[in-house]
Image (tube, rainbow, N blue to C red; front, side):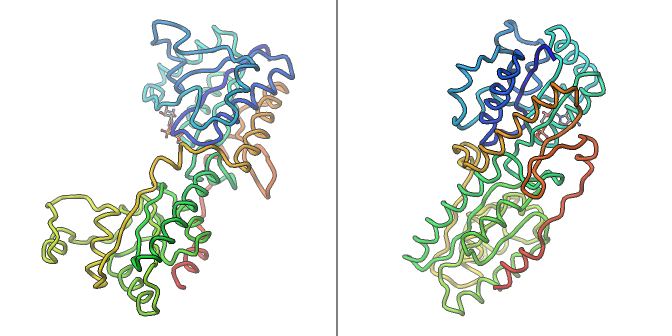
Length: 349
Ligand code: ADP
Protein backbone atom coordinates (compact mmCIF):
# COMPACT_ATOMS: atom_id res chain seq x y z
CA UNK A 1 0.00 0.00 0.00
CA UNK A 2 1.84 3.11 -1.16
CA UNK A 3 -0.84 5.75 -0.55
CA UNK A 4 -4.22 5.85 1.22
CA UNK A 5 -7.16 8.25 0.79
CA UNK A 6 -9.74 9.20 3.39
CA UNK A 7 -13.07 11.00 3.00
CA UNK A 8 -16.14 11.85 5.05
CA UNK A 9 -19.51 11.56 3.32
CA UNK A 10 -23.24 11.96 4.00
CA UNK A 11 -24.40 13.90 7.06
CA UNK A 12 -21.62 15.03 9.39
CA UNK A 13 -21.28 13.26 12.72
CA UNK A 14 -19.27 14.02 15.87
CA UNK A 15 -16.17 11.84 15.84
CA UNK A 16 -15.49 12.05 12.10
CA UNK A 17 -12.42 14.19 12.77
CA UNK A 18 -11.24 11.79 15.45
CA UNK A 19 -11.48 8.97 12.92
CA UNK A 20 -9.53 10.96 10.31
CA UNK A 21 -6.87 11.71 12.93
CA UNK A 22 -6.64 8.04 13.85
CA UNK A 23 -6.27 7.11 10.18
CA UNK A 24 -3.49 9.73 9.86
CA UNK A 25 -1.68 8.51 12.98
CA UNK A 26 -1.87 4.92 11.89
CA UNK A 27 -0.78 5.72 8.31
CA UNK A 28 2.16 7.72 9.67
CA UNK A 29 3.11 4.83 11.93
CA UNK A 30 3.27 2.50 8.93
CA UNK A 31 4.94 5.15 6.74
CA UNK A 32 2.00 5.30 4.31
CA UNK A 33 1.27 8.76 2.79
CA UNK A 34 -2.34 9.92 3.32
CA UNK A 35 -4.52 12.08 1.08
CA UNK A 36 -7.66 13.75 2.45
CA UNK A 37 -10.47 13.98 -0.11
CA UNK A 38 -12.84 16.92 0.28
CA UNK A 39 -16.64 16.98 0.34
CA UNK A 40 -17.26 13.26 0.17
CA UNK A 41 -17.13 11.65 -3.25
CA UNK A 42 -17.25 15.10 -4.92
CA UNK A 43 -13.50 15.45 -4.35
CA UNK A 44 -12.86 12.56 -6.73
CA UNK A 45 -14.77 13.91 -9.71
CA UNK A 46 -12.17 16.42 -10.95
CA UNK A 47 -14.75 19.17 -11.32
CA UNK A 48 -12.77 21.82 -9.42
CA UNK A 49 -10.36 24.13 -11.20
CA UNK A 50 -7.69 23.54 -8.54
CA UNK A 51 -6.63 20.15 -7.22
CA UNK A 52 -6.25 21.70 -3.75
CA UNK A 53 -10.01 22.29 -3.64
CA UNK A 54 -10.49 18.55 -3.89
CA UNK A 55 -7.58 16.98 -2.06
CA UNK A 56 -5.01 17.66 0.56
CA UNK A 57 -1.96 15.78 1.71
CA UNK A 58 -2.69 15.04 5.34
CA UNK A 59 0.40 15.50 7.43
CA UNK A 60 0.38 14.30 10.99
CA UNK A 61 1.31 17.67 12.50
CA UNK A 62 -1.68 19.45 10.93
CA UNK A 63 -4.11 16.59 11.45
CA UNK A 64 -3.39 16.29 15.17
CA UNK A 65 -5.01 19.71 15.62
CA UNK A 66 -8.40 18.51 14.42
CA UNK A 67 -8.77 15.40 16.61
CA UNK A 68 -11.23 16.93 19.05
CA UNK A 69 -12.76 19.50 16.69
CA UNK A 70 -16.48 19.13 16.04
CA UNK A 71 -17.74 18.93 12.45
CA UNK A 72 -15.59 17.43 9.72
CA UNK A 73 -12.38 19.16 8.64
CA UNK A 74 -12.51 17.44 5.25
CA UNK A 75 -16.06 18.77 4.77
CA UNK A 76 -18.88 16.52 3.68
CA UNK A 77 -21.55 16.72 1.02
CA UNK A 78 -23.97 14.56 -0.84
CA UNK A 79 -22.74 13.68 -4.33
CA UNK A 80 -25.59 12.75 -6.62
CA UNK A 81 -23.21 12.02 -9.54
CA UNK A 82 -22.04 8.96 -7.63
CA UNK A 83 -25.31 7.21 -8.44
CA UNK A 84 -24.15 7.23 -12.07
CA UNK A 85 -21.65 4.50 -13.14
CA UNK A 86 -19.85 6.98 -15.41
CA UNK A 87 -18.91 9.25 -12.51
CA UNK A 88 -17.88 6.32 -10.33
CA UNK A 89 -15.51 5.32 -13.12
CA UNK A 90 -14.12 8.88 -13.14
CA UNK A 91 -13.60 8.62 -9.36
CA UNK A 92 -11.81 5.27 -9.64
CA UNK A 93 -9.56 6.66 -12.38
CA UNK A 94 -8.76 9.70 -10.23
CA UNK A 95 -7.69 7.45 -7.38
CA UNK A 96 -5.54 5.33 -9.70
CA UNK A 97 -3.96 8.43 -11.28
CA UNK A 98 -3.08 9.73 -7.82
CA UNK A 99 -1.53 6.40 -6.88
CA UNK A 100 -4.05 5.94 -4.07
CA UNK A 101 -4.26 2.21 -3.45
CA UNK A 102 -6.97 2.19 -0.76
CA UNK A 103 -9.76 4.40 0.49
CA UNK A 104 -11.25 4.87 3.97
CA UNK A 105 -14.88 6.02 3.70
CA UNK A 106 -16.42 7.51 6.85
CA UNK A 107 -20.20 7.81 6.49
CA UNK A 108 -23.54 6.07 6.63
CA UNK A 109 -25.20 3.37 4.53
CA UNK A 110 -25.42 5.56 1.41
CA UNK A 111 -21.69 6.23 1.59
CA UNK A 112 -21.07 2.50 2.06
CA UNK A 113 -23.06 1.76 -1.10
CA UNK A 114 -20.71 4.16 -2.89
CA UNK A 115 -17.70 2.34 -1.40
CA UNK A 116 -19.11 -1.01 -2.45
CA UNK A 117 -19.29 0.24 -6.05
CA UNK A 118 -15.70 1.49 -5.89
CA UNK A 119 -14.56 -1.90 -4.60
CA UNK A 120 -16.16 -3.50 -7.66
CA UNK A 121 -14.10 -1.10 -9.81
CA UNK A 122 -10.95 -2.44 -8.17
CA UNK A 123 -10.43 0.21 -5.48
CA UNK A 124 -9.94 -1.38 -2.04
CA UNK A 125 -12.24 0.38 0.44
CA UNK A 126 -12.87 0.20 4.17
CA UNK A 127 -15.95 1.85 5.73
CA UNK A 128 -16.17 3.45 9.15
CA UNK A 129 -19.78 4.05 10.31
CA UNK A 130 -20.25 7.79 10.80
CA UNK A 131 -23.88 8.76 11.36
CA UNK A 132 -25.64 10.10 14.43
CA UNK A 133 -28.82 8.12 13.75
CA UNK A 134 -27.39 4.69 14.67
CA UNK A 135 -29.30 3.27 11.71
CA UNK A 136 -26.75 0.68 10.59
CA UNK A 137 -27.98 -2.74 11.65
CA UNK A 138 -24.65 -4.60 11.55
CA UNK A 139 -23.06 -2.52 14.31
CA UNK A 140 -23.98 -1.72 17.90
CA UNK A 141 -22.74 1.84 17.54
CA UNK A 142 -22.00 4.42 14.90
CA UNK A 143 -19.77 7.46 15.27
CA UNK A 144 -21.69 10.42 16.63
CA UNK A 145 -24.64 8.53 18.06
CA UNK A 146 -23.40 8.64 21.65
CA UNK A 147 -22.62 12.36 21.34
CA UNK A 148 -26.03 13.12 19.82
CA UNK A 149 -27.80 11.22 22.59
CA UNK A 150 -25.83 13.13 25.22
CA UNK A 151 -26.74 16.46 23.62
CA UNK A 152 -30.41 15.43 23.76
CA UNK A 153 -30.14 14.18 27.34
CA UNK A 154 -28.62 17.49 28.47
CA UNK A 155 -31.30 19.44 26.61
CA UNK A 156 -34.16 17.31 27.97
CA UNK A 157 -32.86 17.50 31.56
CA UNK A 158 -32.77 21.29 31.32
CA UNK A 159 -36.22 21.35 29.73
CA UNK A 160 -37.64 19.10 32.45
CA UNK A 161 -36.31 21.45 35.10
CA UNK A 162 -38.11 24.45 33.64
CA UNK A 163 -41.17 22.30 32.91
CA UNK A 164 -41.30 21.42 36.60
CA UNK A 165 -40.99 25.09 37.60
CA UNK A 166 -43.92 26.04 35.39
CA UNK A 167 -46.01 22.88 35.64
CA UNK A 168 -46.18 22.51 31.89
CA UNK A 169 -45.57 19.52 29.63
CA UNK A 170 -43.06 19.80 26.82
CA UNK A 171 -42.64 18.28 23.38
CA UNK A 172 -38.96 17.75 22.45
CA UNK A 173 -38.08 16.89 18.87
CA UNK A 174 -34.77 15.13 18.30
CA UNK A 175 -33.08 13.83 15.13
CA UNK A 176 -33.81 10.44 13.55
CA UNK A 177 -35.53 10.33 10.16
CA UNK A 178 -36.02 6.58 9.97
CA UNK A 179 -34.53 5.46 13.25
CA UNK A 180 -35.89 6.27 16.72
CA UNK A 181 -32.79 5.20 18.66
CA UNK A 182 -31.74 8.73 19.67
CA UNK A 183 -35.29 9.49 20.87
CA UNK A 184 -35.65 6.21 22.73
CA UNK A 185 -32.26 6.31 24.49
CA UNK A 186 -32.69 9.99 25.37
CA UNK A 187 -36.19 9.30 26.73
CA UNK A 188 -35.00 6.36 28.83
CA UNK A 189 -32.01 8.29 30.16
CA UNK A 190 -34.09 11.26 31.26
CA UNK A 191 -37.13 9.45 32.64
CA UNK A 192 -39.30 11.03 29.96
CA UNK A 193 -42.88 9.80 30.04
CA UNK A 194 -43.70 9.43 26.34
CA UNK A 195 -41.56 8.60 23.31
CA UNK A 196 -42.65 8.64 19.67
CA UNK A 197 -40.53 6.99 16.97
CA UNK A 198 -40.72 6.45 13.20
CA UNK A 199 -40.74 2.65 13.60
CA UNK A 200 -44.12 2.53 15.37
CA UNK A 201 -47.44 3.90 14.08
CA UNK A 202 -49.04 6.27 16.56
CA UNK A 203 -51.99 8.59 16.85
CA UNK A 204 -52.43 12.08 18.26
CA UNK A 205 -55.47 10.92 20.23
CA UNK A 206 -53.55 8.08 21.89
CA UNK A 207 -50.69 10.36 22.95
CA UNK A 208 -53.21 12.86 24.34
CA UNK A 209 -54.84 10.04 26.31
CA UNK A 210 -51.48 9.03 27.78
CA UNK A 211 -50.60 12.62 28.59
CA UNK A 212 -53.97 12.98 30.31
CA UNK A 213 -53.12 9.90 32.36
CA UNK A 214 -49.91 11.62 33.51
CA UNK A 215 -51.82 14.78 34.39
CA UNK A 216 -54.36 12.74 36.35
CA UNK A 217 -51.47 11.21 38.33
CA UNK A 218 -50.35 14.73 39.25
CA UNK A 219 -47.47 14.82 36.77
CA UNK A 220 -47.79 18.23 35.17
CA UNK A 221 -44.35 18.33 33.60
CA UNK A 222 -44.39 15.25 31.38
CA UNK A 223 -41.96 15.20 28.46
CA UNK A 224 -42.91 13.85 25.04
CA UNK A 225 -39.76 12.98 23.08
CA UNK A 226 -40.40 12.79 19.32
CA UNK A 227 -37.96 11.63 16.64
CA UNK A 228 -38.18 13.96 13.62
CA UNK A 229 -39.24 11.13 11.27
CA UNK A 230 -42.22 10.29 13.49
CA UNK A 231 -44.44 12.84 11.78
CA UNK A 232 -44.47 10.36 8.89
CA UNK A 233 -45.63 7.44 11.05
CA UNK A 234 -48.56 9.40 12.53
CA UNK A 235 -52.12 8.22 11.83
CA UNK A 236 -54.02 10.80 9.73
CA UNK A 237 -55.17 13.74 11.84
CA UNK A 238 -57.07 16.84 10.66
CA UNK A 239 -54.90 19.47 12.35
CA UNK A 240 -56.43 22.29 10.30
CA UNK A 241 -60.00 21.65 11.49
CA UNK A 242 -58.97 20.80 15.04
CA UNK A 243 -56.82 23.88 15.69
CA UNK A 244 -59.10 26.36 13.90
CA UNK A 245 -62.12 25.08 15.81
CA UNK A 246 -60.17 25.45 19.07
CA UNK A 247 -59.25 29.09 18.52
CA UNK A 248 -55.76 28.60 17.04
CA UNK A 249 -55.08 29.83 13.52
CA UNK A 250 -53.74 27.16 11.22
CA UNK A 251 -53.41 27.15 7.45
CA UNK A 252 -54.73 24.39 5.25
CA UNK A 253 -51.94 22.01 4.18
CA UNK A 254 -49.58 23.27 6.89
CA UNK A 255 -47.31 20.39 8.00
CA UNK A 256 -47.37 19.27 11.60
CA UNK A 257 -44.40 20.29 13.74
CA UNK A 258 -43.34 20.02 17.39
CA UNK A 259 -44.86 23.44 18.03
CA UNK A 260 -48.17 22.55 16.41
CA UNK A 261 -48.21 19.22 18.21
CA UNK A 262 -47.74 20.98 21.57
CA UNK A 263 -50.68 23.26 20.67
CA UNK A 264 -52.85 20.24 19.94
CA UNK A 265 -51.85 18.52 23.20
CA UNK A 266 -52.62 21.68 25.15
CA UNK A 267 -56.11 21.82 23.68
CA UNK A 268 -56.85 18.10 23.81
CA UNK A 269 -55.75 17.83 27.44
CA UNK A 270 -57.21 21.15 28.59
CA UNK A 271 -53.86 22.46 29.87
CA UNK A 272 -52.95 26.08 30.45
CA UNK A 273 -49.72 25.71 28.51
CA UNK A 274 -47.58 23.17 26.66
CA UNK A 275 -44.28 24.09 25.03
CA UNK A 276 -41.95 22.65 22.43
CA UNK A 277 -38.24 22.61 21.63
CA UNK A 278 -36.45 21.26 18.57
CA UNK A 279 -32.95 20.21 19.62
CA UNK A 280 -31.78 20.39 15.98
CA UNK A 281 -28.26 20.70 14.65
CA UNK A 282 -26.56 20.96 18.03
CA UNK A 283 -26.77 17.15 17.92
CA UNK A 284 -24.44 17.09 14.94
CA UNK A 285 -22.07 19.91 15.79
CA UNK A 286 -21.10 18.92 19.33
CA UNK A 287 -17.60 17.84 20.39
CA UNK A 288 -17.49 14.01 20.41
CA UNK A 289 -17.89 12.15 23.69
CA UNK A 290 -15.06 9.95 24.94
CA UNK A 291 -17.01 6.89 23.78
CA UNK A 292 -17.31 8.19 20.21
CA UNK A 293 -13.68 9.38 20.13
CA UNK A 294 -12.37 6.07 21.46
CA UNK A 295 -14.40 4.11 18.89
CA UNK A 296 -13.16 6.47 16.15
CA UNK A 297 -9.58 5.88 17.25
CA UNK A 298 -9.81 2.10 17.14
CA UNK A 299 -11.81 2.12 13.90
CA UNK A 300 -9.37 4.47 12.13
CA UNK A 301 -6.38 2.39 13.15
CA UNK A 302 -8.06 -0.86 12.12
CA UNK A 303 -9.03 0.60 8.72
CA UNK A 304 -5.39 1.38 7.90
CA UNK A 305 -4.19 -1.99 9.20
CA UNK A 306 -6.69 -3.81 7.00
CA UNK A 307 -5.67 -1.89 3.88
CA UNK A 308 -2.00 -2.42 4.69
CA UNK A 309 -2.64 -6.16 5.04
CA UNK A 310 -4.44 -6.28 1.68
CA UNK A 311 -7.90 -6.80 3.20
CA UNK A 312 -10.64 -4.67 1.65
CA UNK A 313 -14.38 -4.38 0.95
CA UNK A 314 -15.00 -4.35 4.70
CA UNK A 315 -16.82 -2.12 7.17
CA UNK A 316 -15.84 -1.62 10.77
CA UNK A 317 -18.32 -1.79 13.63
CA UNK A 318 -18.85 -2.67 17.26
CA UNK A 319 -20.17 -6.06 18.38
CA UNK A 320 -20.46 -7.19 22.01
CA UNK A 321 -18.53 -4.06 22.93
CA UNK A 322 -15.58 -4.94 20.69
CA UNK A 323 -14.46 -3.36 17.44
CA UNK A 324 -14.77 -5.81 14.53
CA UNK A 325 -15.03 -5.83 10.73
CA UNK A 326 -17.15 -7.64 8.16
CA UNK A 327 -17.86 -7.58 4.42
CA UNK A 328 -19.64 -4.44 3.14
CA UNK A 329 -22.24 -6.41 1.21
CA UNK A 330 -23.30 -8.55 4.18
CA UNK A 331 -23.27 -5.55 6.50
CA UNK A 332 -25.60 -3.62 4.23
CA UNK A 333 -28.03 -6.54 4.14
CA UNK A 334 -28.35 -6.74 7.93
CA UNK A 335 -31.90 -5.97 9.11
CA UNK A 336 -32.26 -3.47 11.88
CA UNK A 337 -34.27 -4.46 14.96
CA UNK A 338 -35.94 -1.70 16.89
CA UNK A 339 -35.96 -2.23 20.66
CA UNK A 340 -39.73 -2.53 20.97
CA UNK A 341 -39.56 -3.81 24.58
CA UNK A 342 -37.80 -0.70 25.76
CA UNK A 343 -40.22 1.44 23.78
CA UNK A 344 -43.21 -0.25 25.48
CA UNK A 345 -41.57 0.11 28.87
CA UNK A 346 -41.14 3.89 28.52
CA UNK A 347 -44.64 4.39 27.18
CA UNK A 348 -46.39 2.18 29.71
CA UNK A 349 -45.17 4.00 32.78
P1 ADP B 1 -25.22 8.51 4.44
O1 ADP B 1 -23.89 8.02 3.97
O2 ADP B 1 -25.12 9.26 5.72
O3 ADP B 1 -26.27 7.41 4.42
P2 ADP B 1 -26.39 9.55 1.99
O4 ADP B 1 -27.43 8.49 1.89
O5 ADP B 1 -26.75 10.95 1.66
O6 ADP B 1 -25.70 9.62 3.42
O7 ADP B 1 -25.19 9.09 1.02
C1 ADP B 1 -24.00 9.87 0.93
C2 ADP B 1 -23.45 9.78 -0.45
O8 ADP B 1 -23.10 8.43 -0.77
C3 ADP B 1 -24.39 10.19 -1.57
O9 ADP B 1 -24.45 11.58 -1.76
C4 ADP B 1 -23.75 9.52 -2.75
O10 ADP B 1 -22.60 10.23 -3.16
C5 ADP B 1 -23.27 8.20 -2.15
N1 ADP B 1 -24.29 7.15 -2.36
C6 ADP B 1 -25.45 6.96 -1.67
N2 ADP B 1 -26.15 5.91 -2.14
C7 ADP B 1 -25.42 5.41 -3.17
C8 ADP B 1 -25.62 4.34 -4.09
N3 ADP B 1 -26.68 3.54 -4.04
N4 ADP B 1 -24.65 4.15 -5.02
C9 ADP B 1 -23.56 4.92 -5.10
N5 ADP B 1 -23.33 5.96 -4.26
C10 ADP B 1 -24.23 6.20 -3.30
